[in-house]
Length: 602
Image (cartoon, rainbow, N blue to C red):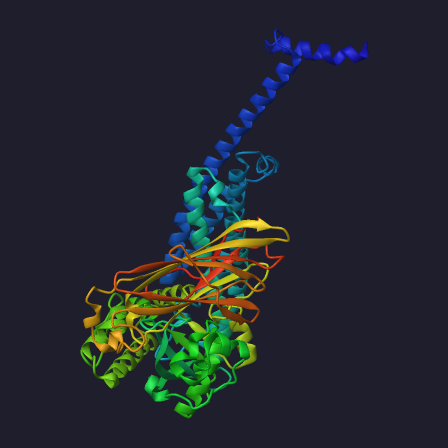
């Protein structure tokens, strides 16, 4: 009798709800479907409330950044409190056991999980990263990172560091968590806002990391414990090299107790060519780059590894300037253009006005047209530009917010590079985005595409290039098959051969107006380059190895208006399941660098 009791109870319940004419199995199915619909309605309602809170938080965070930049501490404190309320509201509406369970439901689980991750991480940022920064901003603003009357306040930087420690830690973790979201699997209405939010957090994480590193490194680097001398190098992207461009304008920067000054200047003519290598090259370096890298100053950055290039540059410069340099700092005209957005236009001695929008054109092309036959005057213009922008920056009248934004943007594009001869400082620099060290991780395979001019001219002013990397297959042992596509195009006018020799070169290596570029492809450490094609035609893989990485050299010749597509198939070493990272030579066009791609190994 007892065994039949459940069936009777079920029928009794069915009669009460009006389902006595259906079977128990059908009734259970109907009930489950009803529950699922109710849960879906619950998730939609909660997600809508969370979305409203997140939209409000986004607006508040924008306001907060503006208030911090303006030094409105009381307003910033009030906005920070409102931001905490908004993110806490969003977190509350996307947490709990039902949301945890929902993130594993087929079809909609990815969307639910993404909402949970976004709300949780933003709440953590608002709760733990924002308050200490707001508190310290009452005493210290963003102007702390820019000079006033030629001096940076080192004591203020030391005071700022504890607040930045936590902000850096929290934002780095949020960047990692949000970066793990596969936005391609989200529904359309979620994809765009979460992609935008992820980009905002990534930018914030990079800025927090840069500020933290600056507060950590600058007191010692700026002569807090003794005078430091640095060689400032402005790379010339019009004659491309692996790290950006030919090392052109040179300036001596002295730092003492935060006081900055610019001394002697020079150009490539100041250095000359050495009779023998200024540093000892490894066999691999000689094979991949030739000994010219250590005998001709203009070729010191054939290597994409900036610390190595800086060592070679310093060896040349120590002798030429009769100075023992403590380090090398490198920027390019694109960076100078970014900085001019903060310091305003500068007027050069020859009457040329440099602005944020004209700096690249003037320094990488205009100067060669105006002074086609006067190399000394070209060098004077470059030196004058470097000094004028430096003086405007350290004078204290620049817009601190825009100057810092310019430096952060340049660093993200690998245009600001720093090397120190002090091992402890260099170790800290290598933990930042400023070292320019050749990437070489195994779990996250690193791929490089680096360009070097072979024309002996300034024709890369007309070079347009871009690269994209995909992981297309996962093999046994967590090996990935990577597909790399690189495009190069010449935007030179059809009559480029009539341009001055200072632009086209004398035609020694290529006809005037034609560009020659050596594209060096760096495979991941321990991986292999399996196939290379140019415009669909298979090429012989040739090159060498450097630091455990296979290097292939692809010579490219570009007539005016011509374009070339280089395709490369490569395989990573075993045990490399992480996201592959693509690093490239910074060109004239603004572009992201060190870009990661989704792994086919999950």
